[in-house]
Length: 371
Ligand SMILES: [Cu+2]
Image 1: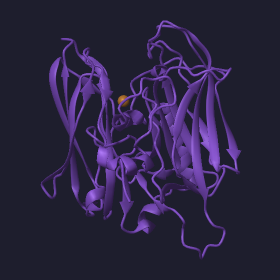
Image 2 (image 1 turned 90 degrees about the vertical axis):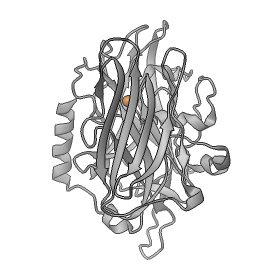
Image 3 (image 1 turned 30 degrees about the horizontal axis):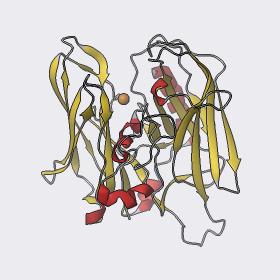
Image 4 (image 1 turned 60 degrees about the horizontal axis):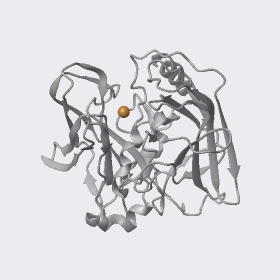
């Protein structure tokens, strides 16, 4: 059962079979990206920053909307954000950015997987490289590690990694939940793209209307373990070597199915330690190209041991290292996040992390202001 990294994709050979089923794992992007080694794409999905980018002030792009299409026959929801206009060779600071937009969940049940894709108005694929990141946040729930944040349910970066389905597991939603979608785009290519839509296909399972029936799907909770602890994820790099650590405390017993990671260019490595138990959980080495640009971060799963066990009260320490060769500081140039899926021993306490409608509204207002 288990698996993985969330967002990421994972894949190790031994895990491949499993991985295919994991959310993170595996799958590569539909677009025209080079087929990355499967195991590794996952990493980027997480680019999300949910609030991470506080110090950036972008112009807001106009006319961008969220639409959804529900196909009951295939049990798939397609969420579409757009249209976006992306002039050639435009960085994310100069590019007008979509505002935070809200998707209203149309079903009671579980979201099982996420497959992102970029296309123009005619349906032609647009390269994933124009997506700086997208992040989906459930405004009706609090994150279980960082209750000051909304629950971060999905993210993708330019790798457009799919979060594959992990059979038997899903993310529980209630009809009417408002998902805040935070997307940042740029265009490093010399081709302009017009009328671009970000489309995410999300298979789902409906909850049984018979409340006595056992749930068909077990709930997993996305787990973002960040070197910035519970603050904004983006941070500055100084020239040369950088090592940053943060910590979070797990308040529930349960198991981690697997992890991937999210970092930026010039990354070296990210580690996760259970400091209470004085044990290294995982070390993820970044794969870079010859210019130091991030290619991928591996996914590691803990299936073979039945998941990595956390006990309530465990302190987790996350450490990210970078080597910035530019001899200049890089403001907000870094992130260091280990992303996983957590299955609590007792779902009741985790399921209860819902926000009252009022506080959700406030949270939205606050989040909107922050960014
Ligand atoms: Cu990032």
